[in-house]
Image (cartoon, rainbow, N blue to C red; front, side, top):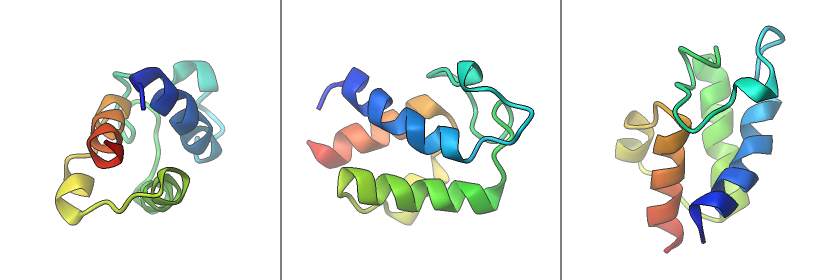
Length: 82
């Protein structure tokens, strides 16, 4: 699966959990999920669960601990689906 395909599939998942003060156009590969996109820890857990379902993968605790940016998510997903 290509980086672009992963990003395209990841974007709607992240978009679902954006607070009202953040717009979809703010989501960039280098965006920090908590700092830039203001996603709280509860929603971060929901994102992880949705990613696991959407990509049919299982994220380990080590993966989740390194999950900071959209690029981090793409990299983790890429290693899991290949």
